[in-house]
Image (cartoon, rainbow, N blue to C red; front, side):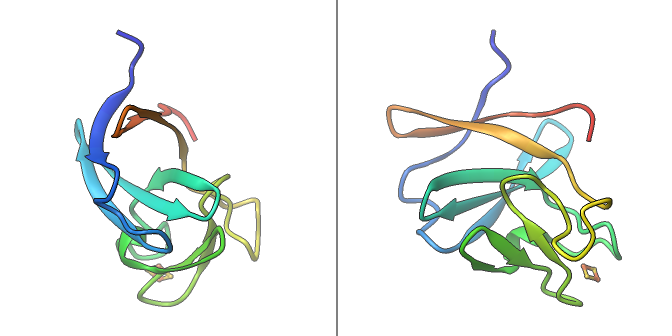
Length: 105
Ligand code: FES
């Protein structure tokens, strides 16, 4: 096993949106950007909102509760890159969207 897990299929997450998936015991936010799929941890480090349900603009998602903004490529908080959530590798295998979880942030 190479650690990649199928979480969705092409078409499940329309371009310009995100969605949350459970992978092992972790919640992962998957985003369909104009440059492809990106994945970060779903829980906002502020108060735990689901980043997968936030509004996506380009490669930046705004937390739905208090609008902290995160780059979905790096996981960095846009307004202070010292704070970040884990970003995860994403690949397409046929029409399957697969992620490999990063164990450390
Ligand atoms: S819970 Fe995300 S900004 Fe407050």
